[in-house]
Image 1 (tube, rainbow, N blue to C red):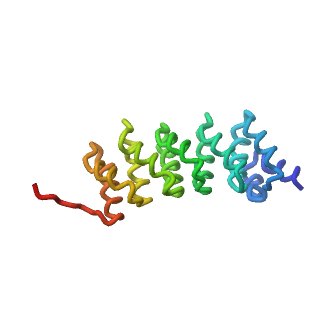
Image 2 (spheres, helix red, strand yellow; image 1 turned 30 degrees about the vertical axis):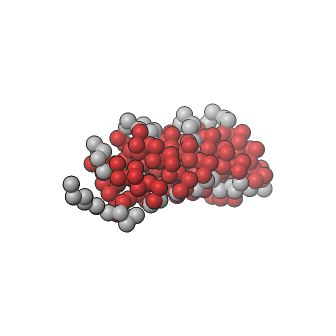
Image 3 (cartoon, one colour; image 1 turned 90 degrees about the vertical axis):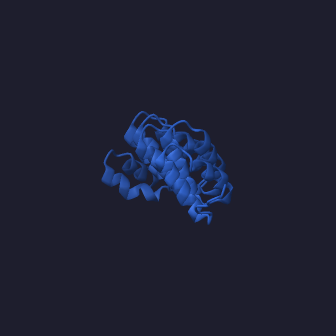
Length: 187
């Protein structure tokens, strides 16, 4: 059955591949890694989808490596799979993906970072405070608001003064979630 499963997975027909993708086992890992090194973007996409179903460090490491694939659809599959795993070792490539030229991929990375939670907070704070791209800061503020870690309070307070109204919105949302809310100081 293992060879038959791989034939179906890499058949080039989405319905056939989708029917077996959840049946992959660790014994398939070498074949999946070989497909990732191949030139066929469809086979690479299905290999990534299958890796998302495999537990373990080897599958996670392969997904981390392919998160920077040159093909946007393969990157999307990897970012989605990393988000489902919520693996802290994925924080660095996910932070890098916040600046992807594709808004869709940047949002996938944001959602994956939200699922990872606290291990992503230091990198998200850095992106919020130092990235020149407003879109990266928006996604960082959105993720920090969702994670609601008290360590982000100073960065979120500072982001209330950001030039982007969306950054300000998510900073306010995050502070509200953390119980800080709008604080007015008399001067």
